[in-house]
Length: 492
Image (cartoon, rainbow, N blue to C red; front, side, top):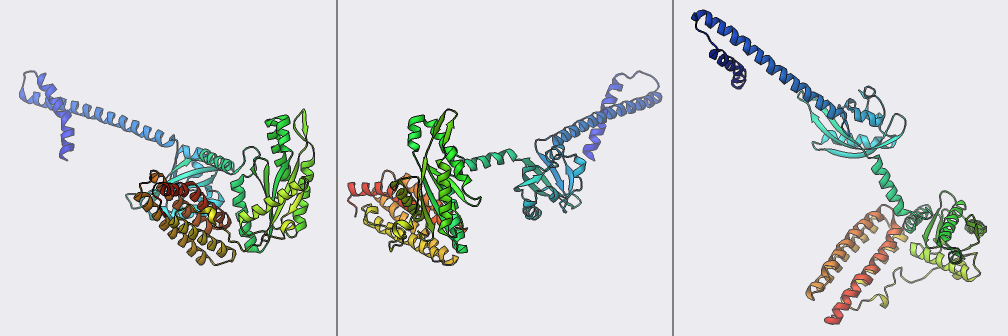
């Protein structure tokens, strides 16, 4: 009250000071009464003016808040505990394509795309149970049926009457999602032909192996190389060659089913996965269709016509190998047999060698892989044996606990091996020690990712990657280290 009283007394004091300075002599009693009335009137006028100014400031502040709220670049919503909308700004209503009144008291879940509603429910329950901001991304339905990709940032708020509300900031991320989708597509597809690239092909090949293994089915891999393509480039130029690749890719696609995959592996090489092959004739029929389709004349432009062919090699799962690299090697070998046999033809790998059965380990760590430092070679060989053990467990249908245990063993031994190398680098002052240590960290992170992917069903592509993971590290990093140790210090 003391501060409030002082604020109200301020106009009175000012009014008294103004009247005292203008006071005329006369009877004290009349002058006192007049003085009081004049002071009171001046005080009221000043208070009214102050109140008017405060009201104007309040209204201006309210208008600014309303403008900021309604015309913010993001949507603002308030939900009650039943997830019904109690407030929404104009931007939020505009993003969803309807009048604000249409959203009041509406359940927020009805605005979410069906495929994301279960996710929304879990997210909303999490918001109710947490005191910190919770974020999610999901797809919402606009009035016209179009999908709106949004990011929701929600926070639980407790009102003065203990009522709980959920305050949400809704941000339109549709454009960002489209860019991410496009970037993802470009990362897995060949830009010239729009076919899956090598990386995506190997991923789908891994899925095909897992599915065939689970369902006890078989599938075929066709490896294809265009015949006469070099002559097109030489005679008509690279633009004509690019056009021929695009036309060939389109013709390949007309020869397979939606469930199959055709990819550009590189240059004028292509590969196809034919899923669920019942008999050899299924693969033969597709190969014949491809040869016939490619044999038709090709017009890279209005004035040019050329002819090409295709040599095809066919490998079968599981007859020609249970792993990605063995299957691809078998299909590649069969393709070269077609090349040497007259081109524009197809061959099965079984027709060449009667199969690919061998007692050789999957990773054959022979003397060509040695770096020349005994402890490093011994540990590399042990790692190769462990990866072979993992491959055998996978192909032998071992349970997930056994496979996971082998992956853990590889992880532990890899750390031990890296520690050994780092002690050697520190002891002998290896000049590239920082770069080498950084690669060790990256390799361990890659292995953790590969283990996760393996346990999620990407077994074959992970095994194939692990094989390269080991050999690339030896070739690119450990051989230079070993050469340094042997040259300057003759380390055994």
